[in-house]
Length: 367
Image 1 (cartoon, one colour):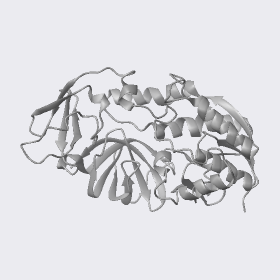
Image 2: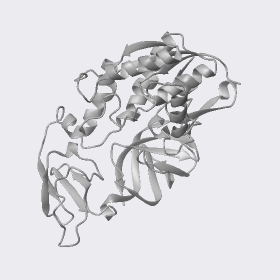
Image 3: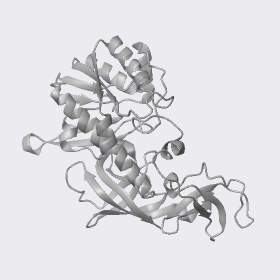
Image 4: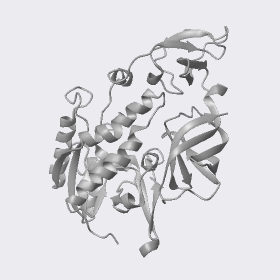
């Protein structure tokens, strides 16, 4: 039986949050929508026009018959998320802004604001589930994967705490994306056919390197292959990520006279400002059996006890079996099979079946 509550929903203008709000209203909850504006730099550009998103969110609220409040968290986003995002890139790592954005904005600044409005719960359009176990002081929340494996977003939510999960609803966790689209069309939502966003959290879809160049200094240097031969020039280590194939500008160069194969970024050597590139998707330099992670966050509040788990080192990846080993600063993972392009700065997220346990930030990887 569903307990009816005052629920504040984050309405982004997209179809997922719109259907989440609809489902909550159908369940009898008192639903209030909040549109979060979290980015103001060049907000009138073609890439990040939050006023367009707000118009879509307002149209959804009108169809559903719910209130919509416009809230500006741009200062919090810049201080808590974007500053860290730039620091990581400057250090040569590849951060995941969606993970930090969820922990610091959507489930902290937004949750605090919703509670001030008298909300008992908040809700978002994420594809994930929350399961409660135990009673009273023993009550615990578990974060579960969404039932649509192609859309599961538990990876991005792994830094949430017990207090945050206890206040959160994920109405889409039991649905597939195709069902969400069908529902949106059936109830006449104006954004039913809107494309999914794939850009940086709250900043939008834009040429990424061009965007970074506005904030980070270019420090050109050589691109060397595995034999130390210079095959091109890079514009600065901050602008590349491990496993990157596009934008290297060396597509016509062959290694050792062999067959032509695409080039990939394999290593960064900041002490010499060198970018190492290799040919072939499955080159040994792109494969790692072990990683070390720190800056950990655990859903239960404590690290896992069991040694055999599964982990993801990037969002669009199936969980891979591994052996978990706690360390003084975090943990080490030993994978049963090599993992591709394990990238410092990204998150290593641990799973026990469908239960997301938490994770940490990848510090280093090795064969």
